[in-house]
Image (tube, rainbow, N blue to C red; front, side):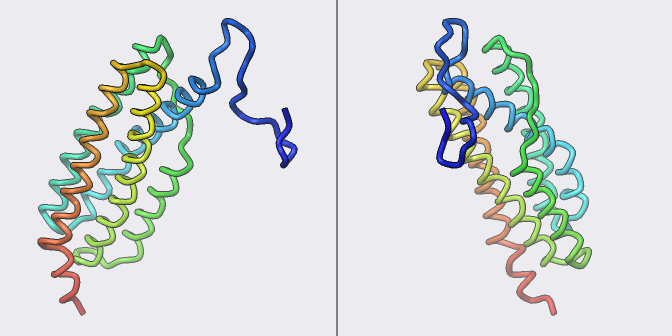
Length: 183
């Protein structure tokens, strides 16, 4: 089946009885993608913590780092429940978001609230990506009848939403005002 671009679709519906349906393949591919993303964040978040000058921002990101380690473990449980090996597939989106965050750190002055605002912006972009991914995966799991998996994904989704809210609170209650006063 060729598309208008002449390329083959990545996820084809297969006719073999043993073959995975295209939707299940897409679901597994997306799990592998977010598994890579979460593992990458475990490596990237310590630099964000170290670069933040606001103690509240540092502690918020530190708490989320601990949650991110738990997210990796939950994904491994999901792979186990599905009888699949926990294999990561490079997530270009998360790699790009992480590079953007590093760029913000490099282009702002150390110890400034302006850098903290940039860290919050970069962190919220990551959170929004994760919220979109976990939301979609939760619904896909339900569609595929994987209620145990959907429940695990929904737990992580709720934590990602909470992390986003905490970042907003730090920005609105402290960092944005301090940055506005900087020369």
